[in-house]
Amino acid sequence: MYSKTKETHKATITAMGDILLHGRVYGGLGKKDNFDFVNQLSKISHLVGKTNITVANLESIIAGTEFGLSGFPKFNAPAEIGYALKELGVDIVTIANNHVLDYGEKGLIKSIKNLKKIGLIYDGAYESKEDNDKLRVFNINGLKIAFISYTNGTNGNKLPEDKVYMVNSFKNTPVIKVSKLLRSIRKENIVDVIILNLHFGSEYHLLPSDKQKRIVRTLSEAGANIILGHHPHVLQPPEWIENSHGSKTFVAYSLGNFFSGQNGLYRQIGATLNLTIKKPDPQYQNIIIENPKYNLTFTNREERLKYSIDTLQNWVNLNEFIETKEGKFKSKEIYENIKNRMRLNIKDIEIE
Image (cartoon, rainbow, N blue to C red; front, side):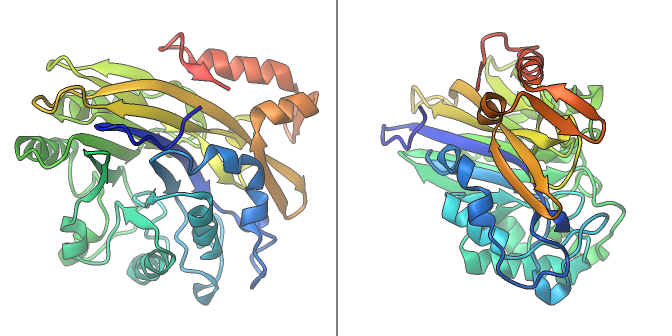
């Protein structure tokens, strides 16, 4: 069981996958109030906020009803989802993703204002150059842990040339420049741990691409300790990457959909990931990452305009089948298939 440790130079982390809210998740795009996200998320509340830091991928902007709620292809969700995440215990959200500019500069600024009002730290998109320059660092038990976020793109939506600082994107900052940034942070000894959130990969692919693998190897070499992947909307098996320094980077290529209105067997299954981080000797940069554990989740369409999320284990115990428009699947077989696929590279990783 993971919990908030107080041991010197040790911290526990929880990471969550994609929160991409279609209107059908919360009762329809015409709904104006009485959003009940806390109740919708109640069955998985024990998985979130119990460690020193909890990070989530907030893929919808939350400019709220003032901008008009919308789903695919341009997303804008109720600000209430931010309050629900805060209540669950989420500490920081990564907002560098392909939908961050769905409502342009104004939508992003409004979303950031709402996040600040809620009290959620955000990373990957910013309201100013000064905001971008401020590294997001948590000091946990003497461990300085930085979060840095980048997206592969923004669905073709562009910012003015004098405002590209508003979104960390590989389109504006190639991977080689991100590597230089990480190396400079390491050289200046600003932090002990670097956690990268990367919005990359191909949607709905159950295995990471060669491009994803090349990127993470480059960034591991540059100093990333943990890489958390988003965008494919399905789980992809994690991997340890050992670099030339003798350090190991834990890579979760994709954490899948955590809470979304996407329908389809593997699109409805996501996870939380727990990790323990230690620094055994303050004289050296080496970090030890221990006890990676996945808790699988399942988002269910209970009826039209009504969705809820539960642990996959609970769902399997209570339901013989998972039914989607594509067919009827035996729950236990799917559960075992996912666990086996997620253990492709790390045979003994803990999965529930």
